[in-house]
Structures are given as structure tokens and as C-alpha cells.
Amino acid sequence: MSPEAQKQLAKTASASQGPNGFFVGRAGQEDLYYTFFGLLLAAVTRAKFQWKKCDAKLHSVDFETLDLVHACAWLRATKIVRWFSVPSIIWPLIPIVSLRSDTKRLQFLSNLSPQFYPQQDAGSPYSRFLLSTLHSDFAATTPTFDLTAYRLPNNLYANLQHHTAYGINATAAALFLLAGSDPTLRSGIATADALAALQETDGSFKATASAPEGDLMSTATAAFALQHYGKSLAISVKPFLRECFRENAFFAATPNDPDGDLEYTTYGLLLMGAEGGSE
Image (cartoon, rainbow, N blue to C red):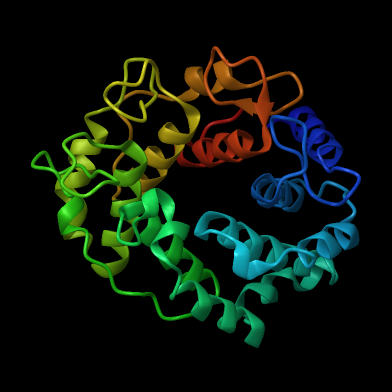
């Protein structure tokens, strides 16, 4: 991003922290899920925020009542806050430190009831992706998985067993898992080829075949997953990125969405990295 855009992004991210410590979502209310994205943006932009207040708010949450998505957000958010509690010069050392409490919480998540998983399915590509990447973040052994029931005849993936419609994010999640299980990446090549063929003429990817238009999350996750397989996008995403960019340096979900938010701004930066472009 240009220096001006970076400065504005830091300012907007900082202003997104609510008075009680969490960052706010699209509805303007403090939210644990959006706090994770707010902290990511604060870290990469060095935006000023009240990390002590955020830390206190995080530790007021009863972890064992959270579903998997919010539990992942909580664990990652608390780890990011630890970075801000120490001088930035030693930030690179923090990711290798895993506290005993982290290990206990990971063990707790391994025994979650089905209703706490996305689609109430612990075996779906998205659920397995969340668990696997979380274990990787905390240097723990990655749980085993089997995605056979979610693989479609066209080599794409669904987030529902024996479903006939693919999902871009399910497919991207599957690609990451397959890459992790097979260092040669061979098990995911056919899926990567099938995914790459779904790019729209404007450079975007639609979440599903029936979606009205491409969105930034689907595009970013698809591009990032394909990058792991050494595949370049056939169509540049720069025009699509620019259409999603807003004056406050946030990114919106689609070109027609008037407002950006913390989550989609993170996807915007992810897509910029995968594309190697600038804004």
C-alpha cells in the first residue's frame, strides 16, 4: 500500500476499537470475532490501541462457552495481545512460545460437541482447517482428517457431506489441508486446477456457483490457496481490489458494498500479497 493508505489504514483500525476494549464489527458493536481482525491490522500497521483494555476484555470471556470459530478468534487474539505486552524487537520470538493454558484449551477444543462446529460438523473442510491451523499456530500436533465425503466428482469440495454444490472457501480450506498432509502437493493438484478455472472475468471468485457476484473473501482465500500450489491467476485481481477499496483505507466485501470493515480489509491485504500488487 502507498504510505498515505497505510497511514489511513492505521488510523481507521485504531478508531475501530470500542470503549470496552473489543473492536467493532459492521453493526458498530464490539465483537470478539472482529477483534481478531482488528488486532491483526493493528499489528501489521502498528496502529495505536488500548491493548491492556482489550486483554482484560478477552479474559472476561468464558472460553468454554465459545463455538469453534469464536474460540479460534479468542486464542489468536490473546496471542497477538501478548506481542503488544513486550517490546516489538522480540516479537519474532513470541510465536514459538506456547503456554500451558494454551495446550489445555486446544485439548478442550478437540472434545467439542458437534453443535459448536460450523454447520454442526466437525469433519467439514472448514472445521478441519480451523483446527489444523490453530494447532499449527500453537506448535501442537495437527489432528488427523478425512475429506473424502466432501470431495465432489469435479475435484472441488463442499462443506456438507455428499453435497452436490461446491464452495470456494471449502475448496480453499481443503487445499491447505492437503498441502499440509502431502509435502509434494500432488493430492491437491487436480483440485487446484479446478479451483483456478472458476475465476470470473473481473478477476474475482464467487463463493458458490449460484452467488450473484464475486466477493473479496472468496477471492482472497482462493488466490492464497492457489499460490501454495505455484499457480498464478489467469486474470489480475488488481481492478477488483481497487473497486473494493474505500476512502478510509478499509476494503468492502464487494464492489457494490459501500462500507468496508476489519474482516474484509484483512482479506484485501491477503489478496494484495497473493497478487503482489499495490493500492
